[in-house]
Length: 338
Image (cartoon, rainbow, N blue to C red; front, side, top):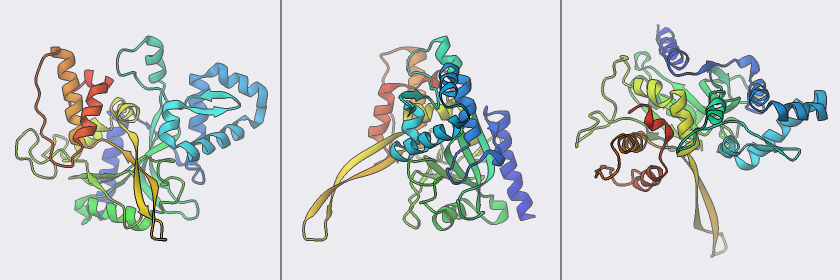
């Protein structure tokens, strides 16, 4: 019974992705777990969106093109990370191949919109996640063949919750595996159940730190508790699957919100002195940040300038980042209010 309940929730989530979110179904048959990629999806996207460049390289490399291209892509991912490759492409024999197209923050032309619509986002269930064993995780979200997010799902009806998913990430997922290695493939990992969602951008065993990605039990009120309010879907986390992870919303987050934060810190060098190291943190907006920025941009875009706004963020909740995102705007804000 518990397995049936678990699968029912996973099936519901997948159905939302496919029927309302704009995602396509991915296939484990196309998954390369050693490289942590969907190579066929990568090649299909490049051939569809950059046909002249693809044809030129086919002429030069013939049957060896795909293997050479894949090796170059993996090297670029390992050196610069998947967020950089998604936004700026990767080099191959002096040319740049794009792996995603995003809507510009201000304005768009028909050519850009046409390329944006060719992005192929896939959700794949029960994906092998380690090269040397057959362990699987519940879901992998990929953009044009490149995995960008993983999800572990639990259902309280089985006696498990998001806390068990967190424990699974800490104990059963090797952070050195290609899929999980910091910034090189998947950028964010979600531990979720029907009640709550929590996230991390770096797996580090028992030191892994998860942040809540919840709306608050009483959104819009001055006093707002933890958790989420009821949702019309019957699952309190329905907002996450139906709104946040909708294709346009998710691409907006990847294209305009996420960033790699770098800070220099002094650490002891073991000889009585100190050395300076650079600490990197992948920033994924929390729900209250995403919600406030999008609603403010939407309101100002519809009602014009000259209004005053008050946003209540608690201490340590990311006010500086919210201000920074607000200054750049967000194209998806003009279509819906979360």
